[in-house]
Length: 550
Image (cartoon, rainbow, N blue to C red; front, side):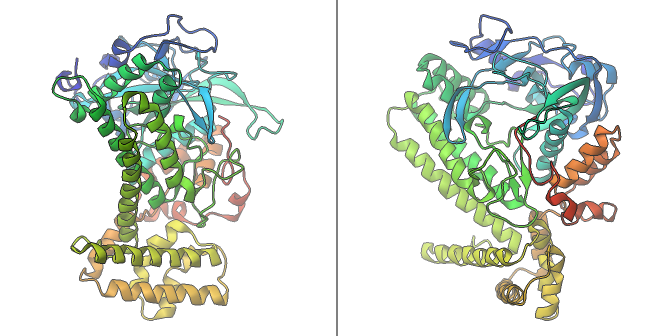
């Protein structure tokens, strides 16, 4: 049954009546062994399994916005059933739990088979308007791809994924979604920083949604094993259901269609990463197995946000070489796309179109990023410039202005989010001193005289630039405010919510979730959540440093 012909699920559908279907299982081969210990799986795209039961499942959080995607109510109609289903203790009709096989490059090195080591897909739910959503449990127990791990997740990492998935959506960043957070009632032993100090932490499971969780690594997996038949079947499945506009009239994709697919993945990835850079998001672990072919932010592990602007910032303690730091993300995405191109080579005879796709990524990234920077700074978009040389000069001038600003940030710790949000106030300020004072809330320390002078000169230059624009100040500020969030789910805010939830108090998490639903609106009741990072968060675990431990 195609998505276009699938019956729609009306809003407010009971969870027990949710329609489940799965084309992935029908169209691709299964591992003949169900469940079982971690092992190398050959000739299969997935393995059926049974989620490990938990002792006392309880719904801790439920996203009304994500629930609406499935046609479900803003609160579970049956909390006990919801807890059982989304803990893996109970299956609805049609649910056939499975984990998929994929490989990938981790920190630049080929890692071989990886797979869904702690993710279990329950099936495709047919949601509002017939849209299909893969329903996936993260932390539901061991799978054949768990290697040496237990497949479980702890409360702290589950809260972080639940929170950030939904916050990113409201920020306008392409992302997977999170439906709910369930406590398991069981303890999970984790050594947070791999330093020989394991502790038992409360276990939890986050239910996440996506049209597909297919990754670059799925294609790398079959190409590396020279399983060209399965690679081709995976490619056809992906195009047919997730890129139907690329399918040929005869219904069998060929080289041209796979080239077009790769180019589209490049476009979507460019847009996604440009958004990361716009809001100051650092993914933390951009391995190829953590990159979605749909161009969605996926796998919220040791992610972080820029507090003070630091292009070398990475929240991941495992990333000793800062491979995945903030400023490297655009280049790493290109590297990952090159790995995907290599995985598609068996389906494409000529490498030149793939090289062209990588150039397309770079062009698209620069185009999106420049447009977003112009919105952040209130600069004209340059859409009315017809002459190519003049357009290029305008782009170079705008990038130079941004580079000069970042040089000022290097001279004094400046909060990335607060500075851009306060910048419109500097335009209307009466004189240089007032303009400087308008953004002073963004500084983590008093600027030196030279730093103050440099930033004052930059503000003068910026004010002169925007004064030349035909756009009126009110329209410009509206455009800037729509691009520069007032509030983001900073790590220290998430950690406060985690600490409270661990003690049984869910109110801070609920309040933070409510605040990030409207991140571009300034609401007085959430002003404390829009403040600079406090000093205590500089060295607190979970605020400035995280690991891949879950």
